[in-house]
Amino acid sequence: MAAILRAQGRLVARLLGVGRRYDGFRLVARCGRTGALVGHAEWYASTETGAYLPYPGGVWSACDSGQHAHHQVDSAAAALTAS
Image (cartoon, rainbow, N blue to C red; front, side):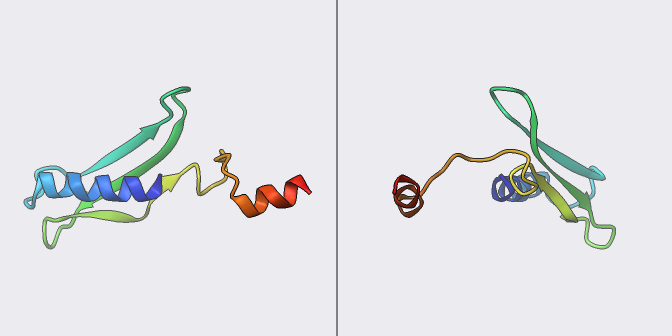
């Protein structure tokens, strides 16, 4: 999720261009099934260059903070569990 938010943030920043048209923007990701917040990213317009930059530590993902789990099991872990 964090990688998607960073990539989409770069895309929005590029679409908005340079010029401080807005002070910044926020991307919000929600679960399609439950509507729960699963991530967000905030970007701000630099006062020096006018370019949109991500806030330091501005990308948050529920995946990173352990608020939900992906039920992925690789073949080695599955073999250990089965024996």
